Image 1 (cartoon, rainbow, N blue to C red):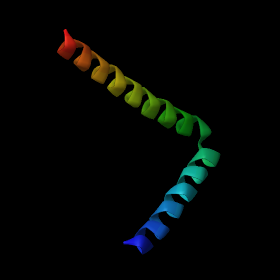
Image 2 (image 1 turned 90 degrees about the vertical axis):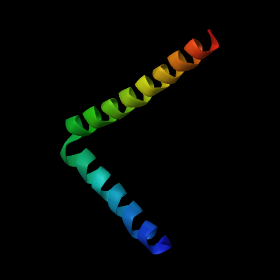
Image 3 (image 1 turned 180 degrees about the vertical axis):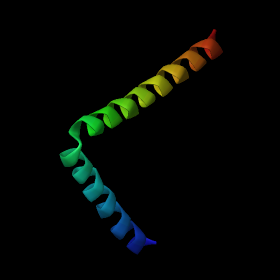
Image 4 (image 1 turned 120 degrees about the vertical axis):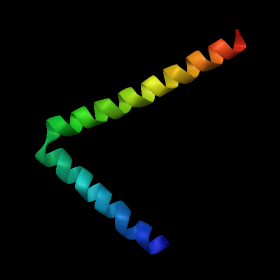
Length: 54
């Protein structure tokens, strides 16, 4: 299993760097969407726990 991780992780990093260099606007949009999804999930958890406490 370790050998798979040793191959897959560098491939993902190389792909991300290639994507960043060749399509910077699309890479920025992808990061913005990911951060937005995390922020939305955090807000939803906050609402849930606020409602639970009320």
